[in-house]
Amino acid sequence: MRRSLLGLALFSLGVIGCSGGSSTTTDNGGNSPVTASNEKNDDSRLNLPPAPTDAPKMGPLDVQAFKGGYEIDFYQKMADAYNKAHAGAAVKVEGDPKVWLQIQPRMNAGNPPDFMFPGWGFNHWVAAEEGQIFGLEDVLKTPSADGKTPWKDTFDPDMLALGQLDGKQVCLPYYVMMYGWWYDPDVFAKNGWTAPKTYKELLDLCAKIKAKGMAPITFQGKYPYYMMYGMLIPWVISEGGPSAFQACQNMEPNAWKSPSVLKAAQMIEELRDKGYFEDGAVSMTHTEAEQEFLNGKAAMVPCGTWLKTEMKDHMKPGQKIAFFLPPVIEGGKGDPTAIQIDIEPWMIPSKSKNPQLAADFFKFMTSLDNAKAFVKEKGTLMAIKGSNDVDLPEELKAPAEALKNTKFKYSIKFRKWYDTFEQEVEDSITALITKKLTAQQFVDRVEKAAEAVREDSTIKKHHG
Image (cartoon, rainbow, N blue to C red; front, side):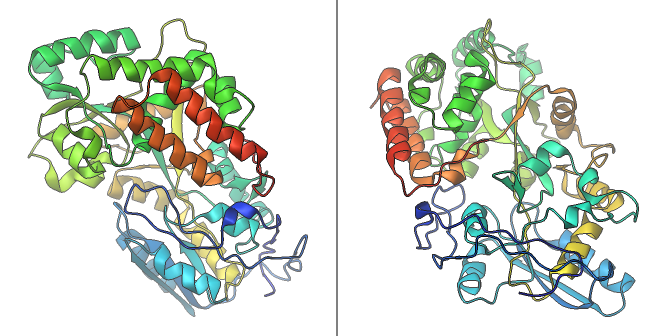
């Protein structure tokens, strides 16, 4: 192990049978992430020595980053700025749309990048469980880029918590993804429509939209997790409150066939039976469905706050899109301000050749000024306190307001905890939408899959 000048602490949680040991991939939006190596780490706990100095060692830093909708040019500009400000630093950022396919063989061979943002195709929980990435408890106690504030205190605590496994910080947030529904405000204004706040309002609106010859709702059918994020789980929470969702997330007995989950499934079933979903959406990719929405074939689409960035090259000049939270159930136990958040985290491999420089570079990237610059340049919200207090683009104002005013933030963590189960949920959603399952059959099928997870002693059980 290398001696860390920032006192990074590596911890191992033991090896879990669910890690599989094989590497699998899917197209964007898929559900079978690349897993970490199946090489077991037998140390119960590994600690690096205390830091003898707070100055990072300079030298080369190999950074590999996911080249998604926000590209990697901003990270490269950060590297150039850092190198100019720190004599001897040689930070180099490279990336690819499927960068995890390049990272994984290097992780398996013991020659990982020094710092990485591996993207959605890499299972960082398995990597943490196998001791392949550093724990960050100690480094978060050190000063941030301003030299005074503890680095931990510069992050939104709810976003920071999304990088914790069993209460241990193993990776760090950067930009924030919020999930909701989208519509074209000009189209709505022209027709006298208003974004629905309740499910009853949604049904009334859908009837009006369908009467106009437009599909009320489209969705990314090839990637059913969009429906899980945009409808199923928000309605579970709206009906039964946070505890109903928490029971599902923790795989408690009968949670997945509770009245709250059944109600959510029945709502999707009702929208299906009333013909409020666009015909053919079940076979669409994420961008195909979003293009249908932008082309006016459908009035609403569930998606995250990356929608504008993802589709900006396919929007008509001057075209607007607007965000609203999933319509809630009147009389439900859930908080109507509840929002779903997620992150795509950064992490330091335990065999990084320069972990102290990696941490210092990320401190630079997450400084308030640089975080604000990312918001303005890339049009997304950030996990850094105060970074969203800028002149936001119009489509981000509603998400930012919702984030500011929410009383309950949540994240669907079981997607990465139990990938086989998560695939079963997605397949069941597709079967529900295509009338192969009723709502009752849906909850029975998913609960059976949850029971299989509970009874499998080789699968590590998580709570959160």
